[in-house]
Length: 174
Image (cartoon, rainbow, N blue to C red; front, side, top):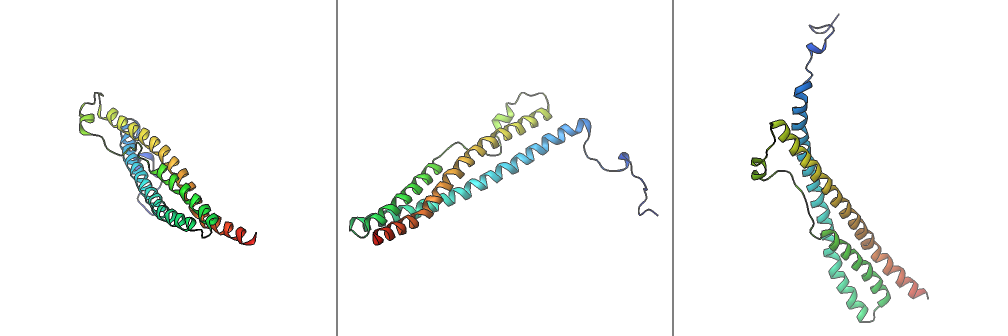
């Protein structure tokens, strides 16, 4: 016994969405929607990484100054300098990562769209989607570079107390 009015649904009996000629238009609209979502996600990732880099930079600079003071007063200068060098490397990596660079976002200025000379709405939508794809590619490259510099900064930041402690232990032992 069947549970519904149609025992064997055919393609004509079920909703399949856009097909053939309408599919290209639907794909263009979806590409724009997905492009906007992707670009917003990239923006969120950039903000999160900038926050992390700012924190490492913010902690490194005053700590370097404090370690410099300790080293200049002759209190375990090797350990202080070793830690300070790691922190200086972390601060430099953060500064390099945070250096302003080109960044793309969703949306076009109205004048660009108004001056568009393509012959159909579909082709304009496909053009916008292609632009979003190019923008996302440029942003991905920047995020990858940023990630590499941030990872290096974290490694140096975390190595700082280890280097200072090992230098101090070696100086005490030797």
